Length: 254
Ligand code: NAD
Image (cartoon, rainbow, N blue to C red; front, side, top):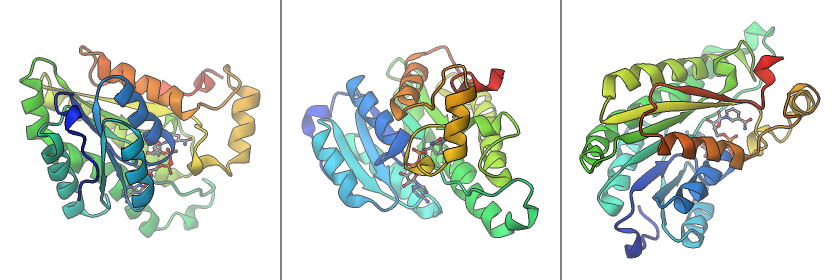
């Protein structure tokens, strides 16, 4: 069900941002509205927040969907395309994490592996698949369409909240490159690989917060707006595809 759909947004390019009622996704949605997009907000459960955001942001609509469910993924893309009749940008931001010490192999159960893989890898791939026709149609208007996947520095270096989480983000980075070669030139596919970002997901990660403050060259974690800025750069850069932009304040250099 679509909530709030201002007719004044009809001539804007359209971006779907998954997981956009909090954290990085909310910052990306706000940023893309400022860049001239009409934005489809999405979340799994926080419908009231999504509807309120859609009312506040002038050019936004909200859709609910559980991305662990394949039929919900299809419905989300169908309803997103139907909202303003086009889809130019897909930001695969929704993701889940489990914090498990890497040495505790027994705690990384098959259920956790499957749950993380379904939401962090299968869902972004299936959303691109469902959106391919609409994105190719958008490219027919003169600019390549754009997919941006939010992965993690943990998918680039052997770090992160848990081995299963890091492995899903490494897989997403590889899927990014495979899709970039497969879907060019109509659809560009890039990824942002953030380090620590101050969001609800990481509010209790005190060790990581200390690490970024004391060791990273930029001496702080990222804000959601820092990551939204990189997403907006990738969306704007018509010649970039297959890039995984590590955005960790330089920690990977240390
Ligand atoms: P967040 O918890 O604020 O956002 C995650 C979003 O994903 C939420 O909106 C949630 O509703 C959505 N989501 C989770 N499971 C879903 C499902 N089954 N169906 C639909 N939506 C679902 O956290 P965040 O930190 O903003 O994370 C956003 C992305 O950034 C994630 O992919 C995360 O892995 C990645 N990331 C975050 C950090 C960080 O430090 N915060 C670092 C690197 C990467």
